[in-house]
Image (cartoon, rainbow, N blue to C red; front, side, top):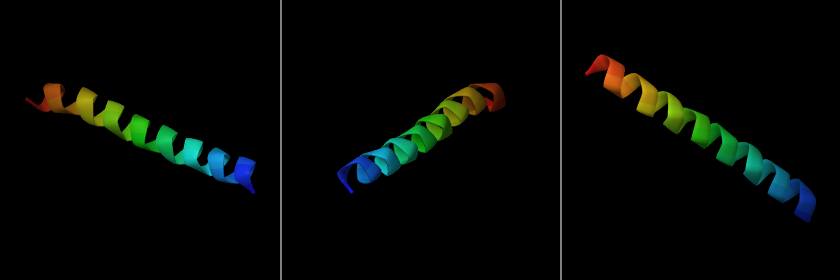
Length: 31
């Protein structure tokens, strides 16, 4: 259970990181 929870948490963290990267990359281009 613990490993599974940490794995899901890592997956969520990766998704959030990719979103932030896309956001940081797109905003300067739009501006």
